Length: 183
Image (cartoon, rainbow, N blue to C red; front, side, top):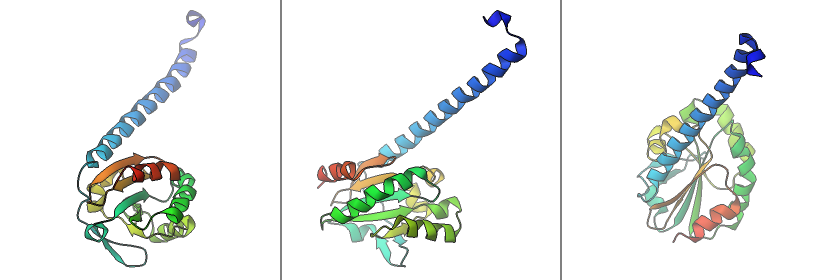
């Protein structure tokens, strides 16, 4: 069959296949690298930080001591973040008093305009604080150069140790399961 094809026809078939395979390989390598960065945060203390939320209130690691915490990283222009948002809003409504949920938007690290970030935050309709991530905070988790890889959710125990790093869109049930395993 291939012997009857012209060289041009054969190349026109092989080039797109090679490009597709290359894309899949690169994407898989990137996912593996980011998964390794996320996994490296697990088992370590929550890094010291001081970030402000969209209302101007300062949040620190010390402020979370004694509570379990969920750090939910998201960004503008993220389809998975949009799909996940209703699940996270539902989670906000059912959290026990010993859990603090903080949303962390990575838009500044990606150079998104402040107006776009404000529109994204308003559109998500989150009830819990939204922190504006800086490079040092992102570097302490999965590196600021990977800030476009969202959503990522970290679950921290009451002693301030990161116990879970969950990449990709999560369900309310999945986050609740991680929280139930953490005290």
